[in-house]
Image 1 (tube, rainbow over the protein chains, first blue to last red):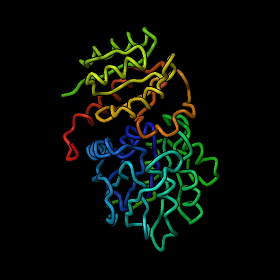
Image 2 (image 1 turned 180 degrees about the vertical axis):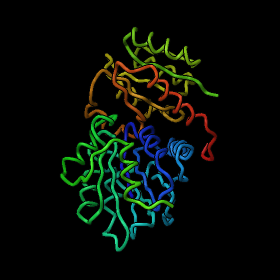
Image 3 (image 1 turned 90 degrees about the vertical axis):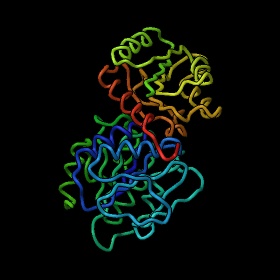
Length: 183
Length: 130
C-alpha cells in the first residue's frame, strides 16, 4: 500500500494509524517532509501506531505488518513492488519525495492487493500516481474534503475519476480492515 | 524540555488570543508582529513551534519561510500556518515540506493546543539523527 500526503499529514497519519490493528500488508508513506524532520515524524507515528514505523532504507525489502516512511530529500521508487530504491533527481510537483514517483514505479501485482491512498495536502502530487494504481488493477482511496486540512491533493486525485472510495481517516481505517487480513 | 511557541501575526488581537491559549497550557510564547521580527528571533536562537500568519505586509508568511530556509534557520522548528484564507495559494509551491500543518482562523483553542503539543513532542524526542 502506498499513501501520498502533505500539509496536515503528521496529525492525519496519526489519526489513521492509531485506528489500525496490525494488518497483513506493507504500508509505505510518502509525506512531503525535510531531512531535518523525517525521523522525528516517523518516531511520532511509531508511538501512535500498533505497527512498527521506520524510515525506508535503500535496498531493503518491505515486510508485511510494517509501516515505512520515505525519507526527506530523496525520491523513492519500488522495484518488484517491494524493494526500496532511493534516488536523487529533480523535484516532481515541486516536492521531494513525490508520491507520483513512488506510485508510478508500481507494476501490476502478480498476487495480493495493491492499494493507493491520497490524503490531505496542497497541490496535485499523487494524482497521476493514483490513476496509474487504478489502471493496473489497484484499489484507490482519497480523503474527503471535510476532513482534509487542505483539499488539494485529494481533490486532484478525485478529479482523475480513478478513485474507488472518498472517505475521512477513520473510515479509511475501517475500509482497510475490510480489505486486508489481520496479522 | 522545549515548550517554546512563536506566534507571527501582524494582528495584535490574534497574538493576544494565542498568548492566552498558550499561557493556559504553560507554554513559553514568543511574539512577532512581522516576518522580519520572526527572523530576528530565530537569529537570536528561538527553536520551537512557529504559528505563522500568511497575509502580512512587507514580508508575508511564505516569504518569511523562504528567508528562514535560505538562512539555515529551519532546522529545529515546526511550522503551522494560521490563516484567514480557506485554501493556500500557489506561493506555497515548493514549501510544502516545511509546513507541517495549516489551520484556518478562527481556530479552536483545543485544536491549536493538540497540534502544538504533538509537534513539541516530536521536537523534544531524542533521535539518532541529532
